[in-house]
Length: 330
Image (spheres, rainbow, N blue to C red):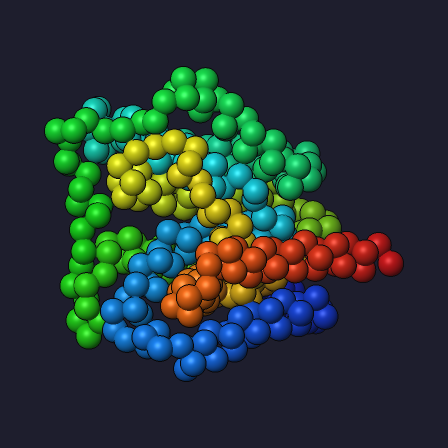
C-alpha cells in the first residue's frame, strides 16, 4: 500500500469513544491550569512563566518519546526513565574520550536499547508493558554490575560540557535554559518526521490498524522497531542533558520521568489506542503538567499533591487501555 493510501485510511477512520475520553482528560487538564493561573498569585509573572518552561524541558522530551510509541499503537514504555539514567551516566563516563565520542556513543546506546525492545514487540508480538518492565530491570542490573553501584561523576577539571547548561536570551521572553531550546527543536523535528516522511505515515497507519497494515504488506515489525528506536534516540538526547545538568550519573537520575512523560502525553491529547497524536501535543501536555505542578507549589500544597495528580492521570491511561481491549474483544 502506498503512503498516500495509508494516510487516507488513518484520517478517514471514525473517531472512537475512547479517543473522546482521551481528549476530555486533556481538556480537563487545560481547564485546571486556566483556573489555577487566574486564581493563583504570582503564576502569570514573566519569571514564573520562564520557570514553567524550564521545568517542562526534560519531562517534555520523555513525553515526546512516549508519544511516538503511543502513536505506533504500543501503549507506552515503562523503562524510559531508566534508559535516561543509563544514558546520562554513559555520557559522563565517556567524556574522557572527548565530547563528540561521548555524545555519539550515548545516542547509539539509547537508540539500541529501545530498538531491541521494539523488535521484540513488533516482530514477536510481545506485550510492550512486560517487555519494557523487563528491559528496565535488565538495564538497572547491568548498570549496577558495570558501575559497582558507584555514582558516575566527571573529572573536577573537565568543564567542556558546561555549554549544555548555558542560558539563552530569547527576545520578548527572556533568559531560558538551552534545554528548552533543544526541546522545542526536537518537537519540530519529530513533527516533521511524523507528518512528512513515509516512515512517519506508516507509524500512524500501523498504530491505527495493525491487522490492516499487515494485510497490506507493510513491514510492521520494522515500523514498530523504528518507533521505539526514535523514542530511544530522544531519551538518549535528554540523557545527555540530564548528565550535564546533574553532573553525576546514577539510577537516582530516573526520578518520575516515565510517569511524568506518560501523563504529559495523555494530557496533550495523544490517544493510547494508537494512530493519533503529534509532537506538538506532547509540547502542550508537558507545559500543562508543569503548570499544574507549579500551581500546586505556589498555592502552598506539598509535592505529594503533584504526584497524586500525575498518578491519577496514569491510572486513567491504564483504565482506558483496559476498556479499549474489552471493546476490541466484544
